[in-house]
Length: 222
Image (cartoon, rainbow, N blue to C red; front, side, top):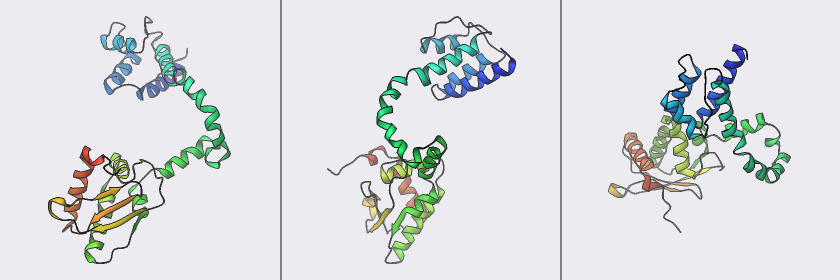
């Protein structure tokens, strides 16, 4: 095997297994695939045994072993489930979005929430200055989100981490004091936004507190 081929196998195997292992195990793999390979490394042997691999590894076969593990975990094990779904999902090929992988990826990117897309979905009709200020504060809060926080916020609003609705209705309430909080109805989806916030920081602190509170994600309407 050429050095170039070995590097390619190492790279592909590491990328594949990175989705299945912890950060500590990734570091173990990197060391094993590098110049510091040790066949008696305890972490490496534990890693291999976790995947039911009892092959005696050497500097000459470690790349092949890692590659075979990646193939086993990502292709062989899910194969039965994939075969079961084929006759069900094959009907989707009639739709343009499922004609090829590139179009499918573009569809998912289009459905991925971003601050700009979420704000565009908001459907509000403020009737007075406090309501307009509350809506402005909400938009500012949404713009401040990034990364995983955007997905978490959208899931809190709609129950989904991808865009499946055409709009998000915003209504206003007069809740204040200890009872003030945003009320979310994911079946709408609808946001009942208090118009009693005195500043942006009040809204931002309250929304962040509610979203990060596990109990706030429970359904209480039957």
